Length: 216
Image (cartoon, rainbow, N blue to C red; front, top):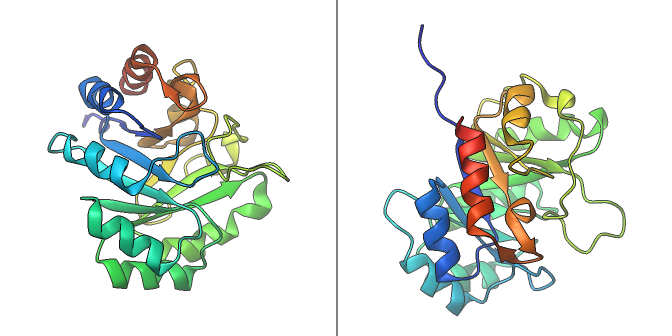
């Protein structure tokens, strides 16, 4: 019987060269750089460029943006060698398609889930995005659209297939990574706060433990 393909892990919100090196060494398939000033994981374009240049071949470099303008995206994509854009705001399907066409990069659209009413919107984005990020919906009044350390009821998306690759995010930790993948059928997991010792401070031991748990 064919073995299931290994779980891929994205570690988001990296801010130092040591973080990038530790994530790559641990076996991350993607590393994410956050361009959202309100986040404790935010980096400048200059910082992200320096970090991205150090990312080993074979590890995808992802820029996370929130309702970014063309001018902001121009600045990021002109300076930082990227493999993907992650849209984590209120971008419409039309805006997703527009960004894909303008920048020629694969686009991942993040979508928040709190209950079954949030699922139909995912279909509309699966028609235009290259990948989907299924995250816990931020609570009302939250400053951050993601990275809040919250999970949602994974049974809502168990066995779902949207026709494009998708990632599970929200409240994932080394302790629940394997269970999250098992319950949902996700082949890709995204983690940020779950591998930190403090907001915005990545922990190499936790990153390694997360990836080991996910791939076990």
